Image 1 (cartoon, helix red, strand yellow):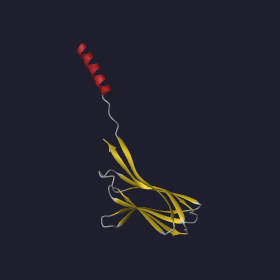
Image 2: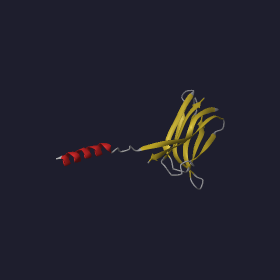
Image 3: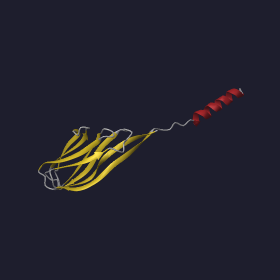
Image 4: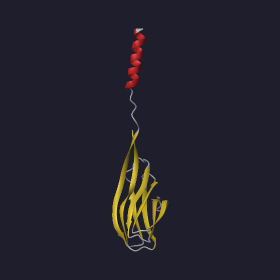
Length: 144
């Protein structure tokens, strides 16, 4: 009888003593802040994904505020640059300003440890527009 009680106590203590660690992942951002007045019809920003040497899942994103955009249409593309130098469009959006200021944001899955490009083009009705905000990468690093 003592043997059974001891085994039960030992089993209960062992069951409560085992603690399973939750799986957590760290999100690492590699972003750049930009503030500019876009006087030309086309501007682009190169994004080198050199901080992700272990090929963790990657997302490209931008969060921009566009000033003096009333009646202006902007085309914004997130592109991956191939090894031969060609641009492959991952996301393309057009933003039309119905009021003085305009918000633009996008997030798309990218290719880990590859070069990418943010391409902004004036489509129609644009003068000099001010652009401020962030663009960059987000990596999800597993927490082993």
